[in-house]
Length: 268
Image (cartoon, rainbow, N blue to C red; front, side, top):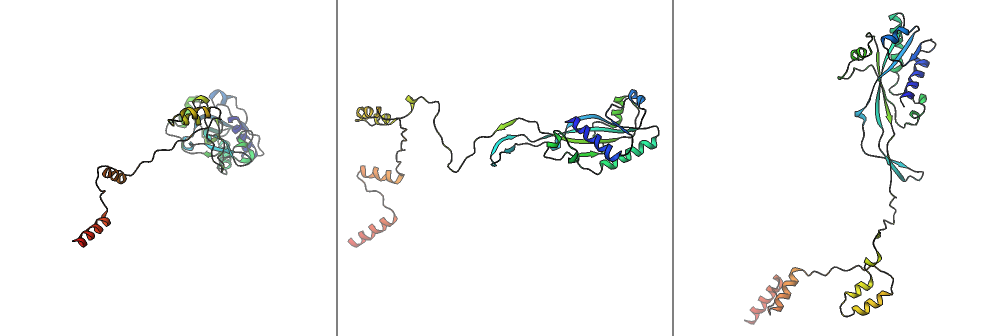
């Protein structure tokens, strides 16, 4: 993945920014010893930092479909990694170096992402753009002076190029079967046949006909019996039953009481 970004940048610079010139494009560390060996105009793209772009981190899963549009698997979204390049120009005269940096800057400002037509390998299969930024302020946790100090060289004018590359390598999770219009089928598994309820077991709990029911059900195929919940009477019916058992009339409703009062008044 990183080497493919190197090749895209090399081809982009040679065909657009440095077209018709004999300038070399290398990726060596610009140390003091390396600078002493440069004997031709050179553009150096030094990859000095690799870290994940947390602002582009996504959560959840992406669905993958077959030719019928059915979800067959799920995978995590791509994770972006920032590749930071320190671009410098090396010639005999500072004016020529500035001219090269100007050409490189103008070339990169035409793009907000790597040109899709130049992508190869895994980058060509990416379904999302590969963004790039040029000459932005450095992050607070480091400066370019620190980079040059670590290299042991002298500070030179440079361009900071950051390419955010998506990495799609992630575990693939198989999806379950789709649910059709007929719904789901449920069943028992791993239960011995002797423990399943049968018609014989239902007949055994009936009381007097337990023996006959058990004998008749022994020759029948196994059949699951679904019991019925007992009926629960409402509270008013229970109070009425207790009143009748005690020899009292149930308490009538309002309409019944009015009718009884009218009858008592007529008798008087």
